[in-house]
Length: 119
Image (cartoon, rainbow, N blue to C red; front, top):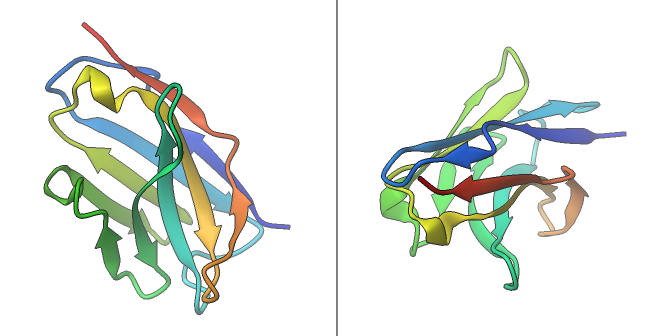
């Protein structure tokens, strides 16, 4: 059973960089052919895909967030990390990490973590 767990600060100040880590257990983030994604849901809005890192280490980003987003991984810890720079209150959301299969099925999710951007 694959499990994902998000961690990071719940409060970030405007203009700072938001950093979240997803720790994966029950499966390796280097296993072919899975993709490890970050998704967020602002209050009262739908899910927004932010980006992903592939089993190979290749990264993919939403065009609307690409200039501010970086996803990396630590294979020794079986973790992948999201960094979102220059945050504003509009970046307030519940942030999720998820595993995506080659068939683009989101088969495992973390429970989500609330991040609030406020001074």
